Amino acid sequence: MKNLLVNIYRCIVGGEVGFIGEGNEQWYYFLSLVMNLMLLWWLKPEIALMFTVLSVIHYVTVFVYGYFMLDSENVIFSYIYFGIHIILLILAIVTSFKWTVITAVITVVSILLAPDCTGNNIFLRVPNVTNSLPLIFNTIIFVAFVVLDFMLPIELWIKILIIVGALIIHPVIDWFEGECVIISDVTSDAIGNIMESWDL
Image 1 (spheres, rainbow, N blue to C red):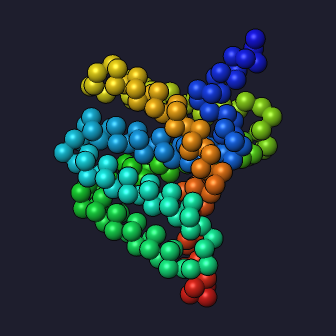
Image 2 (cartoon, rainbow, N blue to C red):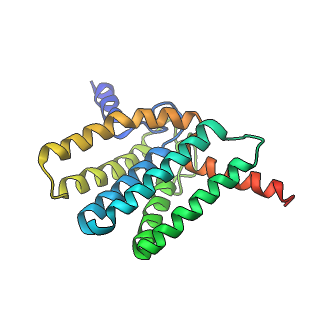
């Protein structure tokens, strides 16, 4: 019975190393972007649409690069990736420097807290695949997401729909993480390609 309850719990907050064993980084990153947008639509609706568009473009480019172009020998894709993101960053700063910083802080902290494929994060530095310590971090970010969701001034059914949508999309994001759609891998690969093209 205990194992059944623990497995149900894992299905809600995510397994220690994700649903397919590749870690939780992209899930944490996705949730951090969503939570930031929730805050914006609640506290700063006049700039929320702009940040939503920028976030969607950003996430799509991470997906396209990671899924289709990662490790491509054509360095032009890396330049395009960074070119797009420099433009997105400039537009975000022009729209609101404060919220650009807030977004960056939320996403960076989330990535650092995300257990990787060995169950480690910034605080856990020994193999943790065999214990449940990473579940604590999965619980923290999921609870933060749920609490923020229920604080939004929207209808209850919409709040529930948002949570159900997150539960459905979580294993999908984890699957794509196994296909190299990971923000850190995508960015480091693009940097490495550009540096290599400069013979650095």
